[in-house]
Image (cartoon, helix red, strand yellow):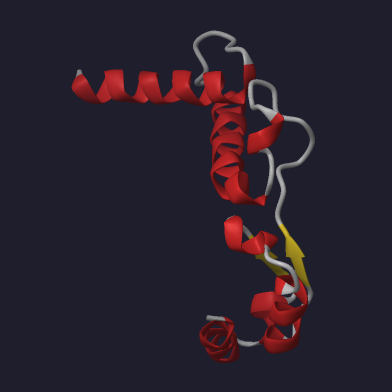
Length: 110
């Protein structure tokens, strides 16, 4: 898999990985995966983890396996707050994201 990614990086150019590569998911927890990725991709590699404790999320879910989805929830929640879309304060990030999705679905249904 890393060899396929390396081929894409070659086509995209070295600036595509100037900030490094971030591994997410359960596979990111495999022993030696970071070193293997670094050797093949010729770029800095790190394993993702959500930034800081996320309110409303159990510690068991705050590792690399869930980093991508929690990052998306966090990004959506921040963006909606900045846009002033949040209707009422919600407890924790999942509550905020769920409230935002509920609002979007209610607008779509009309």
